[in-house]
Image 1 (spheres, protein in one colour):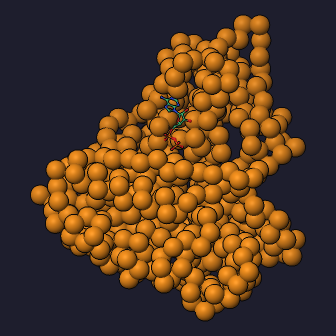
Image 2 (cartoon, rainbow, N blue to C red; image 1 turned 60 degrees about the vertical axis):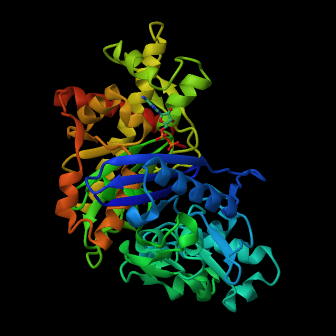
Image 3 (cartoon, rainbow, N blue to C red; image 1 turned 135 degrees about the horizontal axis):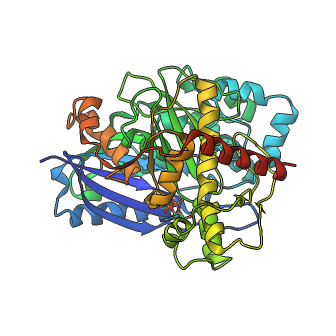
Length: 492
Ligand code: ADP
C-alpha cells in the first residue's frame, strides 16, 4: 500500500491527512492557526506560527496512521489562498506579519488603480479584479511599510510567497522557492493565458520581480522535505490553492463540472476547459489544478454569507441550539410562507456586486415562526448558489451537469434537496468531504506515479448521496422569482 500526506493549511487551522492509494483517509491531525486583528479591517498571521502548526499537524497525522516518513510516496500541499508572506532569503525568517486574504488595508490602493482606469487591463491580464483580496497590493503595501525593504527585495534578499510557497521553502530548508499555477493565479501578478508572471502587472504595482517564486505545474516534483521534519526525505509532488484543490478532489476534471463548498460563505468553481473564459458578470477567471501539461481553467464565484446566516440565527437570534438543528426545523414547515431572508450582511457579491446592500427579512406575517425563518436562511443559501450558477453558465456557455458539494453545511439534507430543486440539477455529495486535502493528495500521487491518470482518480471518488431535483418547474420558478424581487429590495 502506498500513502500520501496532504498538508491542508487553512485560515483557522493547519490540518494534515494521510490518504492511502485507494483514496481512503487513514489519519487526520489539526492545529489551530491564530489570526490577529491589529486594526479595523486588518487581518494578520504569524507565518512562523503557521509553519509550526503545519509541521506539528503533519507529524501527528503520520504517527496517527502508524506510519514512518519512508512509507510516504509524496507530500501534497493545499492552502488558504492570497495570504501574503515576505521573508528573508538567507535565514527563512518572516520580515513582517503575513497579511491574510480577508485583510482590507489596501482598499485605497485598489481604489487608485480603478480611478486611474487600470482595472480593465488588470482583469484582462490576471482574470481578477482590483480588490484588496488578492496578494499583489498586499506585497506593495509591505514593501512600502518598512524603509529599505523594497531595496532589499530588489537585491534578491527578500522573498515573497503565498502560504504554499512559504511551506515549501521551510520544508526544503530554503532549497526551493516555488508556487503552483493555481496559487500564482490569485496574486494579481500572473498572466492567466501565458501562465507566467506578468511584467506589466508587476510594474503597475511597483513590485520587483526578484521577490517572486518559480511558478510550476500543480502536479510535479518540487523538491524534497528535509529529513529533519519527518525523519526521511519525502518528495513534494502536488500543490494547489484550497478552492482549486477541492475542485480537483471532487474529480471535476472536465468542462461543465463544478463544485460548491458550503462553509461560512460559498465557493463555487466551474471547470471551463483548457482555455480561460473571461466573465461578463465580474466572476473571477482562475487557473484550475490539473495534471502536468494539461492546462485547465475555472470560473469562480463566491457568496459572502452562507453558513454564516445559520450561525447568525443560532447565536444572535437563538432560534436553534446547533447549526445542524436548522435542518429539522426547516423541514418541519412545508414552505417559508412567503418569507425571504436576503443575507446581505456585508453587501452582495456576484452577480450583484453591491457593497452597500444590507440584509433584509421580507414577507413576514402574523403566522411567521422560527421554523419559517430557519427555512428562509437555508433557502437563501440555495438561491445565492443558483445566482452564481446562472452567471457562470451565461459566461462560459457551458451548462452545468450536476453540482458536487462539500463544506460544513453540505451535511444539511434539507438544504441539499432544496438546492437540487431550485437548480433543477442533481446535487452530489461525496463520501470523502475532505475534498481539499484529497485534491492535494491526488496531485501529489499523480506526480510520483501512485496514480497514472485522472481516470484512476475518478474511480476513487465515491458518492455518498445524490439529491435529484423533484420540484415542479412552475413552483421552482415562482420561488426563485420571489428571491429576485427580494434582492431588488436591498440593492442600493
Ligand atoms: P468554514 O471552513 O468556512 O469555517 P465549515 O465548512 O466548517 O466552514 O462550515 C461551517 C459553517 O456551516 C458554519 O457557518 C455553520 O453555521 C454552517 N453549518 C455547519 N453545519 C451545518 C448544518 N448541518 N446545517 C446548516 N449549516 C451548517
